[in-house]
Image (cartoon, rainbow, N blue to C red):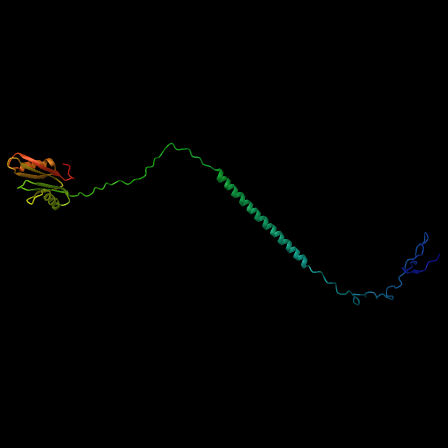
Length: 235
C-alpha cells in the first residue's frame, strides 16, 4: 500500500479517510517546506516588531498607582482601628474607675457612738428693760366760802390753775375762793366746832395733812371737813 506524500493536514500526513498505517509502520516526519531564509520567512534577526539586527522598543509597563492606593488605604484603615481601640480602652478604664469610686462612696459608712454628754443650748435673749414713764404732776385744791361755810375741792388736775378753778366751781357761791392747793401730795380742811374758825394744810400723807390742819384751827374742838390725796401718793 502506498500513501501519498502529503495530505491536506500537511507534509507527510495522509489525506482524510486514509486507513491507519499497519503495525510497525510510522508516517515519515514532516519536512519544513520553507526552511529558515526560505520563501515566506524573514531572514534571521528580523521579523515583525524587530528592527534590523536587534530588538524593538520594550512594551509599556503597567502603572503602580492602584497598588500604592491600596497600600495607603490599608494603612489608614489600620490607623482608624488602632484609634478606635485606644478610645474604647480609655472609656472602659474611666467607667471602671467611676464605678469603683461610686462603690467605695456608697459602701463606706462611719458610725459614731452616742456621746454620754448632753448639751443644752439656751438661745440668747437680750435683757428686758422696763421703761418707767415719766412721773406726771397731779394737782389738788380746796375752796371755802367763809360767810356761808360752803366748801369745794378738786383732785388729780393737770395744772394748779385747773385744780383751783374746779374747786371754786364746786364750792358753788360767788364768795368761794381757793384757800389751798397741793401737788403730788395730800390736803386736809378742818373747822372749829366752837367758833367756826378754819384750818387747812398739805403733807406727803393724808394723816400728816389732817394733823397739820387741826393745828391751824384756833377755836379748839377741830372737826375734819375733807382730806384728799392725788392718785400718785399712797397716803
